[in-house]
Image (cartoon, rainbow, N blue to C red; front, side):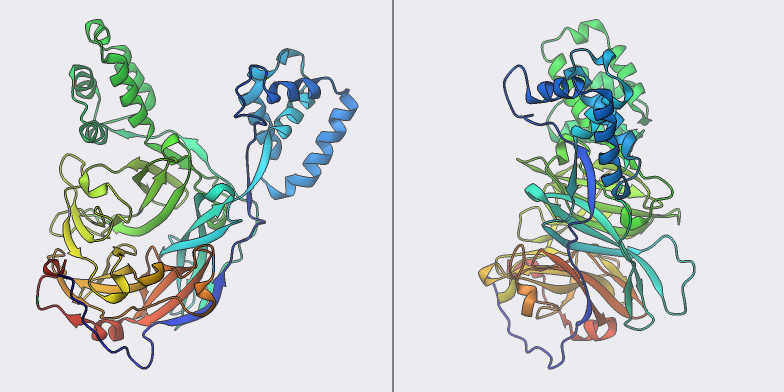
Length: 506
């Protein structure tokens, strides 16, 4: 039976909202490949006919159209003519006499097969906050922070963007102006992991002679070329088996799930866009939860989890970067990673890699990474029990370490699908134990925060502690991003000690 204790809220709210609010900017655009009529099933496509019409244009008209296009759009994008050349190469198979096209004709074809996409035209929401890798040039009491945001554009397509902020001194907050052309990044050579590939095959129940032989022949880390070399060296009596082609297709698909994206060194953080780069995330990259992770080696890296969506199913993905410029991206495997909301702990706990998760859709759980690269079945921590969270609960971001324990910001869904942010405290050495909880929401939608792309929602993907304050970015109405702060000691003092296992309340 669900218990619903009632606690009186303080006269003065624990969380203080900042005046600063980030709103969607439709002028922030990237360039994408555009193929007119690409969904058409006819043999001679509209794209084919368009290239024919461009090919028939006289040279002077082609140069004029190209000059006008470059003059109008070059200031909004980096290396626009290189983009035109690349897009021409992607559609050149549709040209009847490609060798007869002049360089200018080819560039113009590329221009006609390019369009702008406003990455945050619909909404800007669900931020997380980590310390920036560059802390130079700051004054006393200041911390430079990197804010990740979920950007939503036409077709509800989500990508991951960034904002640079300076926290302090005191409760002061400043955000760097988001100017300059956006860059979606370039695909870079990735180092694949054999154990992760094996974990993926285990998740899909694929265990046969073909997969076992290939996994046995792969090194611990490998690149795409090595992967294909090992496949080419498989014995012919294995390749002739009935399930061989299907197994190899599975292995290639899983291997392609790991990739790397790299941005030019001269781009600023707010100009970088992590854009969907494979079929698994083709319909969006949602709700990145960034954390600065320090392993047993003492070397800090940035890690994040996010939800990939392919239009039918979701998958939990992880990324790792040392500089927020080159990102290594890979899938997460195992029962602990089968739903939204996975968030990594910022360090190992008693030698274990831990994460929060919500595999049943309504209960916050704790999962541990096994030696087989799979996240184990989670231990439930906190489920729906108070009126403001009776529909479901979930963690906002990664746990934040304090002397009193692991501070976990939660979200709860109540009547009228109203989202609010709360908090629980986990034991520092044994995080499977909940030691305290805030008996009321820390932050709930109010005023114009109730209006937006999705009404009545306050949602965050993680904050940090600086100078005794909890700094919490949050999405309001799934439409814009606000910031709040609260005194950490006051927050901890307001929490109610737990006298029993929360699992008994489920």
